[in-house]
Image (cartoon, rainbow, N blue to C red; front, side, top):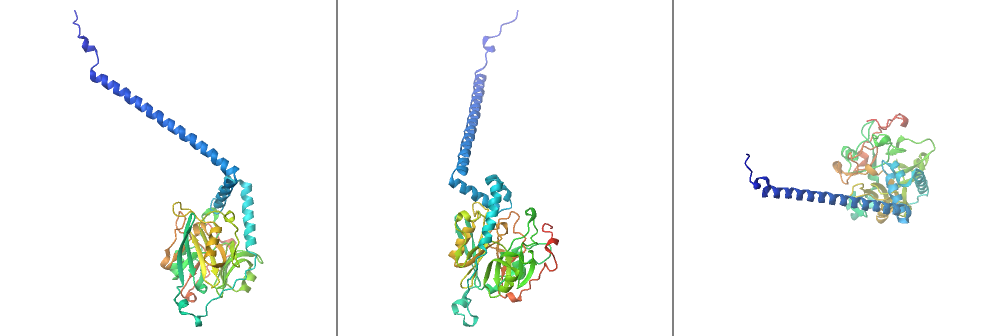
Amino acid sequence: MQAMQPESASLPSRSSVRKGKGTNKRKRKKSRRKGGFLRFVGRMITVMMLLGVIAFIWLFLTPSGNNMRFLMADTLITTQHRHWAKYIIGQAELDKRVAAYQQQFDEMGTEKDTHTINLPDPVEETEEQAEKPLIEIEEVSGTGYRGYVLTVNDPTKIRLGVPAKRGKGEKVSSMVARTGAVAGVNGGGFADPNWKGNGFKPIGVVISQGKLYYNGISNNASTQIVGLDKQGRMIAGKYTLDELDKLGIQEAVTFQPRIIVNGKGQIRSQKDGWGIAPRTAMGQREDGAILFVIIDGRQPGYSIGASLYDVQQIMLDHGAVIAANLDGGSSTVLATKDGEIVNKPSSEYGERYLPTAFLVFDDPDAVDIPNIWEGLRPQDIDAGKK
């Protein structure tokens, strides 16, 4: 006969009961945490959808939203990703806006400039004028932007620099260091296929030391010029090569638009400011001093960028009677002696290789700037070849 086991032997121990209860409790806690997380995610998705609907209604159905939408589109138009603007305003509106800006820029370049400059006579130069430095650099800032104003007190000390070698542009900092310049600022635009251009094929014309270095326009055509004549007077606007020759052009590039003429701003408001971007512009005061405005951008937390209206107002505040836009965006750069970069260029690849730069020299007549485009036709230059 089999012996009976004590009843207690078939019952779980107290420790195992506690262990089972603890496991169940942990499972319930884990389940509650999982459920709470899913509810949180669900609420977040709901809130985001509601915010998206509200943002859509604001952007497309309110005046302030439409203004913001066009500002976003204008900002994209000034970048390498112009085509993205069609997702904000549509392709038809994008084409219409680009054409409207081009027409506006052309009109801004036609009013006759009558400004005169009053350079001091070197023989009668006062002690105060003699002590004035050749260049002065001032920091400027405003809503969403930071940058610099470079003042060149003697405009006759400026020359247009070009790359040292054929086939590729050169960094402005390199041009400054190589030529012994006091300072340098990026100049005109260039062909940039697929935004991978080598910086060697300029847009329009390049004039240095009174000589035509590069001609990318047809005979008798006009182009938007930014530059200086032999007396140091700034010239900006739409001219033919014959007209520029009669004006005694000395240094010049093609770019647009002219934003101040005869002391009057040409851009009426922020709405017409052509988006937010890094900017470079050139202007002149009545005393002859040249002003370069360099605005950084596309760097949240530091500087988003400025509109052309912002740049125009900076120029007017500094006494400019004429001013014009230069190449901006990732080309914007200010370099000083020995090639030190003062601002913060926005290009993710570092300072860009460019075809032209306005350089400042203590003795510009001693500087040799060879014509690297001599004998080359524009159609023979591969703008994308490295």
